[in-house]
Length: 372
Image 1: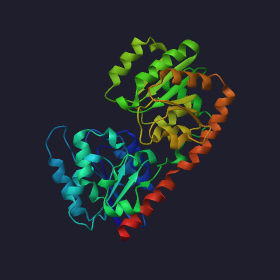
Image 2: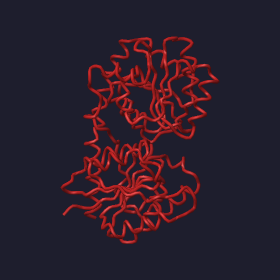
Image 3: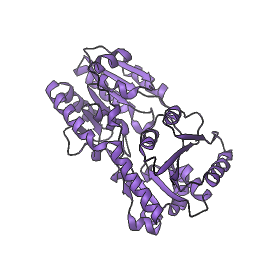
Image 4: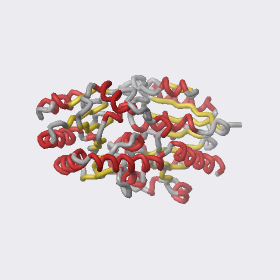
């Protein structure tokens, strides 16, 4: 008999945590586990069809953006009638509700921590903290994230076993391999074939600090006139990002294609991948860039050093250092041979982030908590 597992998250939009769910769940051993996914926000549906196409049952809890808490009753009903052996939570607020809702100790609770605890709003922090001892296991997406989890909020057994650090991976079989991938990606994005392209992929939010990236690129373009910038993504700062592009006078050399379903297939359009985040748990976009063989220039935040350190695939600069980011990008763009060496190192480094490895780690955690 297989163990029934419910993965619970806030939404299934195009964020990093959502990509992890979409990538991991189909690779779990179907002979041991039956996976279902539940999400709160009905407008965040980018990955719903992909999960269903892979045979995963998906439940929308239909949580409105107000104080209507009807979704909590739907979640309780789903858990009570779903006969789940494990509820695996991925977002702090749904996790807190699930911990309170799941009264039966026969249902184990596993939580994946994607963010630094210091980044939580006060209400989220305390909802998480007060219910955290209900977890039978805690997974952190990087050691940097694990180090921020207050040990006194962990259950005694979790303190004994330790927080499990799982550096999540990507499906290396899905990377673009066609010889004309670069040319076709540039054509799709409307980028000149002979340009030097700095690119990034991610939601347009404060944490990604796109303003700093734009400032760095504006200075870079003055030194490297053939440089172009491409920012793939959408989000709450979409209009502000467009405004900053205009203010900096780089509209003619900046491409803003919005959110794209084929973002990973578009990575070969870039000569260098840039990540300007103020903080990160673990950037899946960065790992995908490595898998595409791209040189990377990133801020040294959160789990980024755990991805890049010890490899020649990337250069790191301090968070908020626009001048340092400009210099690093210029160094990489100015040397084609350097980009080639960094690209080879990126492919080699990406091999350590195969999703099958991280899924086997998750399965080992499931086996441990089910046996306890």
